[in-house]
Amino acid sequence: LTGLLTRRAYNKISEQLEKDYERVRSHYAIVFFDIDHFKNVNDTYGHEAGDVILSTFAKILASQTRDIDILARYGGEEFIALIKYQKVKEVTSYVERVKKIIGANKFKYQNQSIQVTFSAGITLRVDHLTYAGAIQKADVLLYEAKEGGRDQIRLEDGTII
Image 1 (cartoon, rainbow, N blue to C red):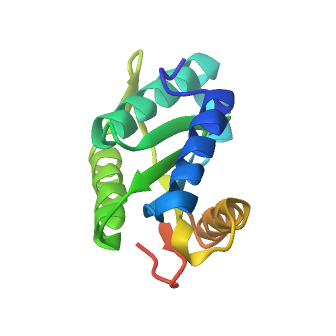
Image 2 (image 1 turned 135 degrees about the vertical axis):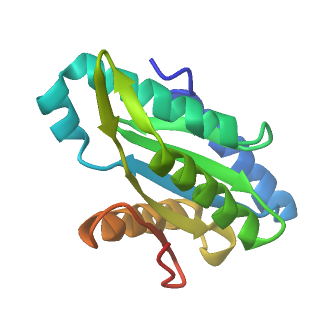
Image 3 (image 1 turned 30 degrees about the vertical axis):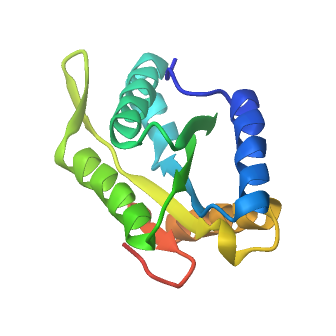
């Protein structure tokens, strides 16, 4: 549906990235994206509309994600990106670009225009002892963004975008 990696394929690739991290400390960030109120979209416009939104959202993510990074559909309306970086600003700029594109456009389904927002949580692998700890923190930050009103990006240092 999305043309992105499945969770199974993501797990294999992320294992390799983690091995690289352990060997040479290559920096990467974990970014969880979740489309806000997605159930409402399906309930209001139907599952076909939901599929169009998932597919289009994935295309926007893919257009903004470099080939050296990893992007996958994590499940349902949730996506994950592993972004290699030299400076943290590269990661926040990436997510801000996606947010700007999503916010400036409406998704089209038949004759309907549907406004979509997303929430995101970002953590840096280097700030955690394990990959599992880093991914868990990114998930917590995503949850905090959704609980905090949605349509926001939460970083581990407390920054909200």
